[in-house]
Figure 1 (cartoon, rainbow, N blue to C red):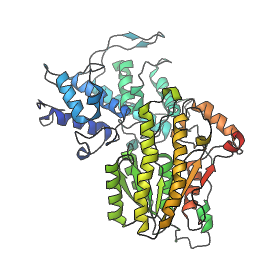
Figure 2 (tube, rainbow, N blue to C red):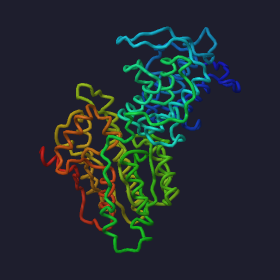
Figure 3 (cartoon, rainbow, N blue to C red):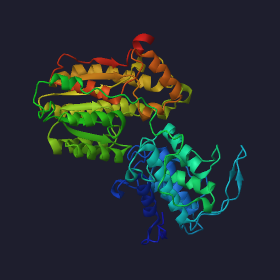
Figure 4 (cartoon, rainbow, N blue to C red):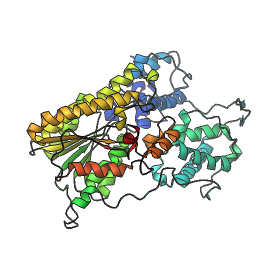
Length: 499
């Protein structure tokens, strides 16, 4: 394509294609060197449809694009394809950043809620964003520096829909907003998006700096997840209770935990580091969170490195395991936590959903396990833990696809346990029930499902991430010798009761 020259944010002149890459870097926070123009956005870079929607939100505003640009699906798979499509779309007009926010006409939604007319100045929007961040900090108790305006509220910051509702309760009281807000789903995903939506709803006189805030009446800063104290000791600590306090059971061990930028994988990685292991943190879609996990481990005195990449991509895997070998020379533990799948009724599951789930959970596991076993062989053997779900053996709402995939994981675990045993590699599977956290909150009908699961347990509570981490560490310890190809269920008795 012919490269058009445009001014971006009053900066140096650059090609149109490069300016598109800059937007991707801005939204994803990926280094430019990773954003190869011809790389596949999802398979190679971990940029899913939600993140791509955010990119297009920025592009739409910057280049005055129509609400639904007519771009073929094939063009949306690479940065080069998108740049080429936008160049054609903008032919006949020189692409240039949108100069100012266009005035909004008065609007009334279907419920009769008015929306303020007239634009809010850019300076006022900056003040408004500062105020919105203050509210998020007040409700979530997060430090302001964590609350990046373009960070994904749920994926990057762990702020779920319940907590977002608390934030809106405060904002509604602060700005006298109507009960039903006319805000799109896309705008609810970042603080910047929320700010942009509020700038439409408020008049210029309402947007004033108010950084010092008192807690609003009715705001609930506590998460709805049960705040139970975690056990002071896990099984591994108990096993080594007689040792001196400065000797850690996994000192000298090297552990790879895939999908460990957030959630359960992060907790497992952090816990193994607490026990002395040097941990390889791997993340793909949550690259920044993977880096943050490494920083958290090292700040606590542990040892960790970050490896970015998808277990479903053979090229990524080669880089990941080459990095492990060059850094450590071998591997002792591999915890296969990376997962990708769709929670939906079977009628809503597509061929693409099946392919993505199988490539990550089964093919990715197989390829990782073979590479891990080769590095373990250099150290005289090692241990592999796979992750499944009791729902692989029965019906659970919205888990039809993932149940079948996890059943395949269990079958593969048994085969690997036999074939890899010749190199003294022990393979077992941990099958936890529902685990409190942001993933569980994203489950369709989560309120109903969580209440039903809690009632079915013998303890009237589900797993915490640290419960699972304790069990994983126990299976990795030297005390466990005779498990091979085992699928070990920990769901508080749900499967026993419903079986």
